[in-house]
Length: 300
Image (cartoon, rainbow, N blue to C red; front, top):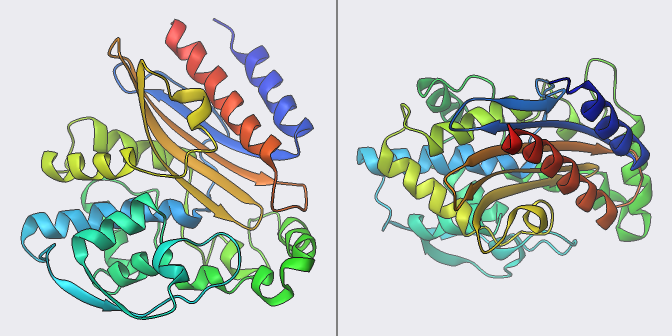
């Protein structure tokens, strides 16, 4: 079956919507897949919290960490729109590792994630991924570095200027004047590498079954469900996911499990070419394009 007309149409729709899209949808039963530029490396933003959850759960399973251990966590005191949980706390809190894992993954709480990075540094997270045979994701820094972008320096009234800089200041080799968007310095991954990670969590792999089950459960309780969930959630399916947002980047990875047994891993990484922080149309377009790829595979 010739899929080029479908891919051309989806590329055109993304372009018309002001998005560069990097997608992969894989049938986890057959291995069949469809994608658009799935091997391009992009900054991963909060998607990195899934590898962090995997590394933390693995260390708990090994007995290197005790999930009941309580840590003193400093407040994030962030006032700009977006961050959740401890990142917005004004006072210190004492929280168990198990609960930090929940906050980091399900609420995308960056302060909780950095408390976990304090136990398992970025370089070790990357090493543990490689031990599982997952080589396409690189973790270089903590989440705190993502709170020092042009948005914070220019203020809410000049958000459009921060997004203009994010759109225009990149190089052809994916370097960038904004460090968090420079693929040689940022946490990075591709649509393919994140689908490989999802496959390792949903299909028997080098990841211990109990560890995989725990991470799947966390992704199933993700509260950020405004991007792909509208097209993949139903009474006859289960959608488990994680979003990532940074300046003009909007990402989501997830797995849809249908009642008939078909299961698809999906990664949608995008760069917006429109200098605005609120773009519900772009969120909907991401979901529609991913669903058309899934629908095509589902009909095979």
